[in-house]
Image (cartoon, rainbow, N blue to C red; front, side):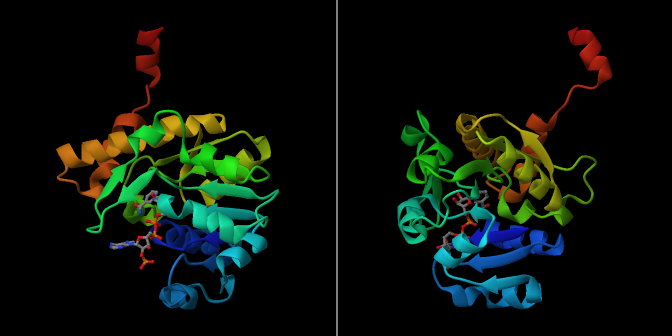
Length: 232
Ligand SMILES: NC(=O)c1ccc[n+]([C@@H]2O[C@H](COP(=O)([O-])OP(=O)(O)OC[C@H]3O[C@@H](n4cnc5c(N)ncnc54)[C@H](OP(=O)(O)O)[C@@H]3O)[C@@H](O)[C@H]2O)c1
């Protein structure tokens, strides 16, 4: 599949690596100085080419939209109509960031919207999917979970059934377990889980983002057969 990586940053760079290994063809772009992508391009060899934001959007049958939330307006302007009809998997959390690189959620915005619904409004002809926003970038690599008994879930949400199916297969290609959370509006709940995970990381793990994986066990806990019997 042809995939455009619209910003190969912490998240997009890791997914680019996984999807290239799974055999997909990529055009990767950087929001900012694209010379920083030289090592990744060298590593991926012929599986990935460097492009502008617009070129990555034009190339992909599927496009990963993974930019900082405050940059969304500028990136959408750069993309123009290139995402019309495309499956657009967006990974954003409604975060702002201080000059010291401290992140905080825009809880006012989150009350009655989500980054996914906002992006869908900005790109009405795109087939927007929410996904990949809950795993901190350092653990957004299958290898980080090699010792785990159960691989981590990647929740996704979309109004487009076919886009959801393709997203499922790309989640699997990246080494994770796809979990369908329903229509795009469910992005609100998925983004709220990120707030919860940040609070848990702050309070239980001294803010160590890598340890958010432990917090994930809270929502990973699945009732086994005995628990099911007891519930019934
Ligand atoms: N990072 C995560 O753990 C994570 C997890 C899930 C979802 N998301 C969401 O996915 C989207 C993309 O996130 P991303 O992290 O992949 O974006 P990114 O493109 O890696 O970073 C965004 C911006 O922050 C700068 N930056 C990155 N790391 C920095 C650091 N340690 N110190 C100072 N500046 C730094 C980048 O500068 P340069 O251009 O110089 O690199 C870039 O301008 C966002 O909407 C985010 O909320 C992120």
